Length: 315
Ligand SMILES: Nc1nc2c(ncn2[C@@H]2O[C@H](COP(=O)(O)OP(=O)(O)O)[C@@H](O)[C@H]2O)c(=O)[nH]1
Ligand SMILES: [Mg+2]
Ligand SMILES: [Zn+2]
Image (cartoon, helix red, strand yellow):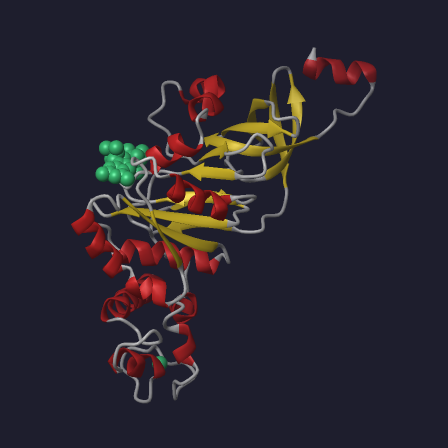
């Protein structure tokens, strides 16, 4: 059957369109257009697909082989000196979920934002646990620069069953493919369970079969929020150490919406915005606070990243 049947009938096996919804090494969970999922393997030694990829696959028995990956609109990934970690492809949006507690890192947040900007993926920031009044007030204040630079920042209380919160969030997710990123403890699992009642069912036995004997998955998982399959939420672990080794330090300011408009004022076209005279960015840091100024914290993040990325490029 399957493989053996094709030569007998003389028919070329037919390639079938599909979507990668989970990935464990060289093994993939691929969903066909009817919504059925099956295990597919990649050709060759290297695993090439990523969750969110549109693929053409070849059925064989009850499994399949991925033959072709359609061109990607974008690919969100992080990269350090040692390795590259792919999150997902073909995203409309990245939801960076943080919480009033534990305290989040603005450096991590900025790195995730820069990675998204570089791939032209719209970021959405959400701050969970607003029921924790005091830590929330502090967190909200720390996010002031991000609101000022134009990012959409949502306040949530995911365990409080607030219909208004859920509505505001669903409205932004509707019809889109959104990857959820965030540090451990922010409420990612709570969010998935809240919006996707059948989350466990969707991951299902195939995922478990693929994952057996292995460590817990480090891969992204695709969930449909609605029955019509128009809204998707992708859950991904691994927010720590968001490496940006793939970013050119000279382009860094262009991916930071608070720095970007001031670059035009720089005297030197190749200004690093670190020490040059007549630098528009430095003068915006020094200027009195306003919605178009640059916060000391963001400028520090820029300087640290610039140093780190320039260092890495020398090797
Ligand atoms: N106070 C409060 N706790 C929350 C809220 N949302 C989630 N939590 C709790 O925060 C902890 C971490 O949540 P979890 O979803 O596991 O975070 P994850 O590590 O990002 O997946 C759990 O104990 C949740 O019950 C919230 O809105 N308010
Ligand atoms: Mg979790
Ligand atoms: Zn400058």
